[in-house]
Length: 384
Ligand code: SF4
Ligand code: SF4
Image (tube, rainbow, N blue to C red; front, side, top):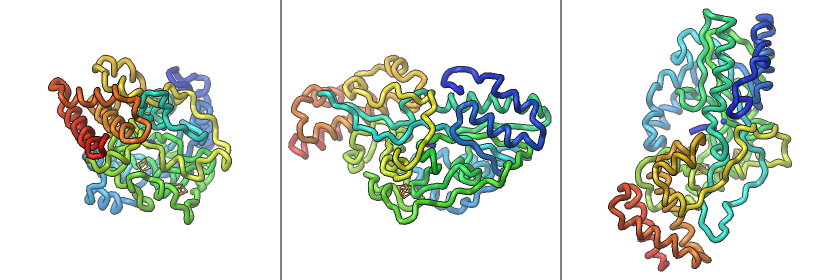
């Protein structure tokens, strides 16, 4: 999962902004590269040596404990994940960048308006970050290859086996908080990471100022997590709502369902409560325009009625497409159950009827029917 963040959303990168990379002296190149990164929209950028992780044993223990849930792919390419020099042979340096996707403006729960809605995590409310980050990273790589045809450059963002948060911290982009996300002193943690592994030596213009851990005695994220997924500096992904709603493809344990609240895709709670994301405590850059929210929530009844074509149309170009239709319907059913189990749900009889219809519809996927049955059983046990 990302931190999980065209100079402009859907547009090509302006070549004029990349041109300084072709003319800078070798001595000036690292500083010029960081300037170029900021000019093409990255909120933060830093450089560090390409070297093995210091947390290899911790990663092994986390995997051995099964905390990755069904994300078996996290154990794939483990050698490369532990050492970027296995991802790119001969790598010496790493550029790490961050896109600001939200400021700390308090978020409101999805407006009900008589219709139950499911919230979307902030990073997924605009265009798909994979595209917007990769487009600029590839433009940087192409320009550097023009200048240094004998060197190799490989872009990464979320999908590649790279421990982005650790490298970001080493490149001076912040510290890894107790919720395991990188927190920049100005940008906070609403940032998405990416970067480039390079065989070209790119020493930081000044030794990267590693940002000291400022979590101190704070435990707000740990206390606020509705599923108790966080212990200091460790998240049990198999209990995390982001994992359950986005990555997990099977049924969700009924015992976990009430804690999902109204989160349809992802969860921001541990970031919302963090003091380093409060607007009063810092002046973050404006969120990159690629992440301008198109929607902050979806109507549950609509999602439950989607065909594959409607899902494709509604979610085109967004990161929400990562969740298959049966997963989105599973999530929507659970949220419908959560809403119906609360007081004031008398006007939602249509939603209740829809759950019952889905449970009895042999044409629905097994995951969706099974979840509908679980939700009906929970509502019955509550006398609703
Ligand atoms: S995203 Fe939500 S469920 Fe996951 S660790 Fe943070 S608060 Fe807990
Ligand atoms: S909420 Fe507190 S403990 Fe958690 S990451 Fe933020 S500062 Fe650290």
